[in-house]
Length: 113
Image 1: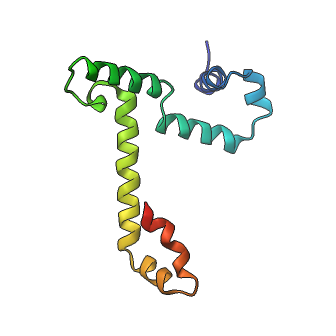
Image 2 (image 1 turned 90 degrees about the vertical axis):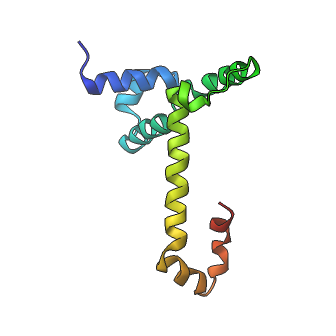
């Protein structure tokens, strides 16, 4: 029987196509955590689900992809949360002060988001 930790290691090894011992003994813990966060935001089969959704839509399915596929729903939700976070930052007093600071024009990248 695998522990939860071992299950996570083997799952990540499977998706990254590497050995479980590499992940367990050589991969930094920070990278291990970031891979799990990545797969939470971008589920493994989301590209396949997106392609299949386009096929379904070409056959006349009107439902949106996030209503049919959980992977696409996760991606849509993370995009919504990201946009809300950016809007919140832009509305903050701190952001207005940063724009007024010397060199604040470099923050134009945020305005493009």
